[in-house]
Image (cartoon, rainbow, N blue to C red; front, side, top):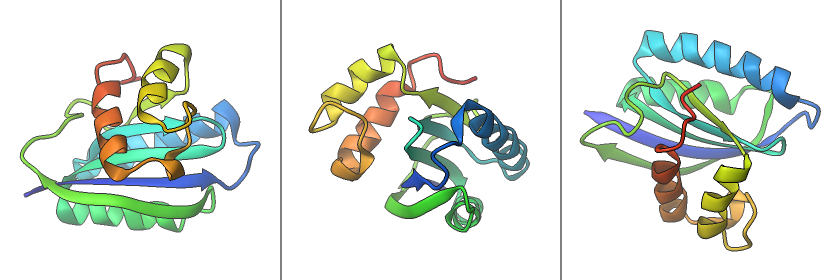
Length: 139
């Protein structure tokens, strides 16, 4: 049984920057590959929004590890659901910063036109992540 989990959090250290995100991505990609977890991380220097997918136990364990990570603040579970197939099967952790092309997608799904995951519904976030999948963010 495959599961999808989407959560959001605020960045604990506003100075995290690109270097800190690279460290998070390196660690996540290693751990996720070992646990057969895939997904996408969206980051804008203030917020994380992430979709995790894989076996229910592996996804849950990954989420619990993130929830106690000091780099995250106010971790909020948006939705968990069973899925028939992965949306990000080739990405142990795809990454998308809020770039100009991504902003166009975000504007359509965000009520105020800026990346503010706390103001979005779980359905909007899920649809937005699936559209972002088509962007070149597997790096």
